[in-house]
Amino acid sequence: MNLLHANDRRGEYPASYYAATAAPLDRFPVLKGATRADVCVVGGGYTGLSAALHLAQKGYDVVLLEAHRMGFGASGRNGGQVGSGQRQDQVWIEKAVGKENAHRLWSLAEEAKTLVKDLVRDHAMPVTFHPGIAHACRSEAEVRETHAYAEKLHRDYGYAHLEPLDRAGIRRLIGSQAYVGGEIDRDAGHLHPLNYAIGLAQAAVRAGVRIHELSEVHRVEPGPRPVVRTPSGHVDCATVVLAGNGYLGQLSPKVAAKVMPINNFMVATEPLGDRARDLLSEPVAVADTRFVVNYWRLSEDNRLLFGGGESYGYRFPDIIRTVSKPMLEVYPQLAKTRITHAWGGTLAITLNRMPCFTRPGQNLLSASGYSGHGVAMATLAGKLMAEAAAGQQERFDLMAGLPQPRFPGGAALRWPLLVTAMTWYSMRDRLGL
Image (tube, rainbow, N blue to C red; front, side, top):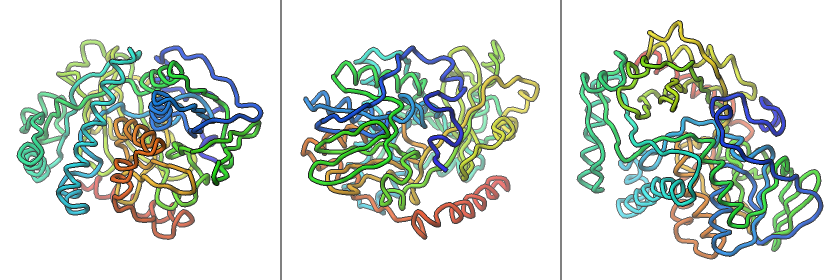
């Protein structure tokens, strides 16, 4: 079964709050017949759109192919959080690659966050960046660890935007008794993720990118001039950028062995009016410390947008039931509140939760597996692949040099092994461990 079609209608966004409030974007034509380009980008999410935009700005002739619509996948369905740092913390990264490269990776992650803000501003995108992400801890031990890590970032990396929160502070901020402390990152933030993708598409078109929707790639033939084939046409090019993330499928078995698609889910409540301030006293986003993370924020019309729960098969479960359970554990006062939208999406994870940058074949570049940290990092990944395609390899190679193990058993056995592991971690969450 193909994840591109398992849960969604061809060429249609899911029935999400984001789709219901999306900025207008005309459909792009289907690729028909043969064409040539300097670079062919596969995938119309943040990674692919950023790569296409940055390549076009460098003067390259770029064709972008998308199986559905711009921002159709995780880029148009996620929690909209633009976080600081890499997916793993700097303690883990220092042990993995040493302190010098850890500082370089921190700088890249900070550049990623700034890049999102700059793109929104410079291209007058139909989206607002709202500052602030709070991290909510479930235990006193997690609070101590979170506050100690904030001190490390200030001391070793000069990052002074984290405000510690005690029990009273977190409960005053998020209006829930479920957490005992945490912090706010004032330099991180959140936005409407689909409108950000639409803004990237509009910017790419203005830069000269040729975009084709409903143009699913079913084969990439590597070589001195790779050929990218769809059911109704093909692109002959010098370089291919693979940017399908969780929807990449079997286009690259080498990537599939290290990158695993999983499903995550969100709901939107009815507008809450004045009750919204009882849930969040400031317009920040929140993520907690569960292994299967709960994350939430208020929409601009005061709905609660809440994400939680994962699945590891092809078909989505009952989404309202799946997400309502953790939502009501955080906010039991919403028990009688109407859910107006419920949607799921497929993202991609790696075994160590760091993104997978690789060259899976001759003249092929790939970046994926952002593991829930993709709004900023996927945008930067596109820029780094644009640099690499233009012959500037250093920053791409820094990311590609991160240790990136294969899933045990490779692509064939990753599903059952991951389900076993995730079931164990989900049980730990339920037990509060």
